[in-house]
Image 1: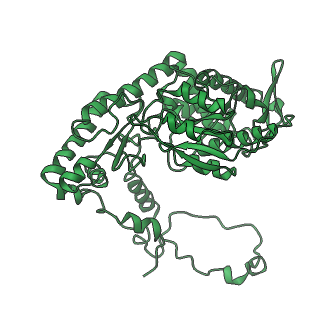
Image 2: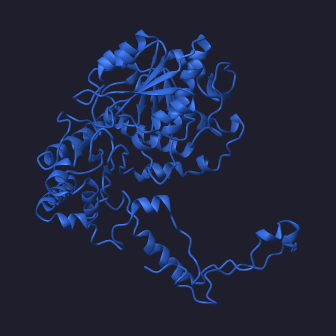
Image 3: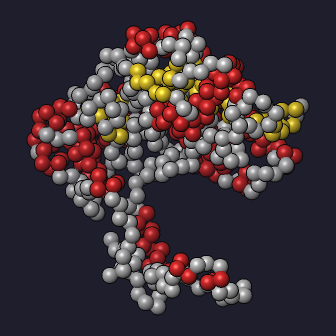
Length: 480
């Protein structure tokens, strides 16, 4: 496919810009001459060529609306378009963030109700909707943990993080000045209780636990884990990025979690990926409510108002009050599904993941052969040992079958990891076609390994040097 610059023909134009009626000012009086250019070398194309170029380019992108997107740990699911329509209503989009409370009663009520809904679903005393995404929610949660111990006069310096955690967990702890210590997993993929008992001292502020973890497994000993943490005065932090596995089945607050961060853009319906938009609400138990970010929404009779009158708060963590449109979509999703619908969504997510696990476990190594939750994790070690075909080769070959590859080489404790999350929105027919493709690739790896190693075969470009592209990207067009 030609670059837009290669389609350029001198004198062609895609737009007719009216003459400016603003008096001309010599740019040299405003900008240093060394920063000015006489020629921008922009492409010159007609409108139809411009439209066709970018339309054809967009068709080369892969998205959930085009096909199955089984990225593990990322919940790339189809989201109802009605939620997009609702969030685009002018009553939402046209309201200025600094509008007086009296002008924003409906929107404030939606936010207040959303906090109550999340508190009920996850068993937490209160929520903040400010954080912009999951990692930002983590940071907010750890900031509250730090402020909690400072208020108590305790100087705890450690945070425990399991080896199956999301990679942002250590960063969140470090940004708040904590030293992070890795907690081992046991043979069944859960927390090693003996190691936790060894590490859990009165110098530990919290354990940051993803549950279900990145192996797609629910922590069977969660109540014992909470007990060990709380006995030493520590707090139990829950990374709720995988909440679509247990909605309506259990509540983290009931299991002993003191803090939990969610990903509305993963669990509650907003197209996820490409850097945003996101929303990472944080829920806390009663002991941490006073440390929530400000401003907070308070209800006085039938009216709702912003308030900053909370002396122990960690302060503001986000401009305005978070990504409001994402919160609207999540609100619409929760209200349209209702309690029974949320339970059904989790049941389908778990069923789909276990269906894939059972269909593929004869063809790929399964490090932890137990009932999984929302995702399943295989290993490509068998293929490496038999024919030298690595997980990345099989992922590239899957592109030839029309699928976006699943997450690979994560979690790190599984060599040659293949992490698949089907989500609750995929049909059995889609899962069967995907499994058939994976089984065909496993057979190719044994019978014709070079074909897999050379994949993809049917894409506009062949296999790229990913390391070189990441370390020395060259995205600048240079005029011949």
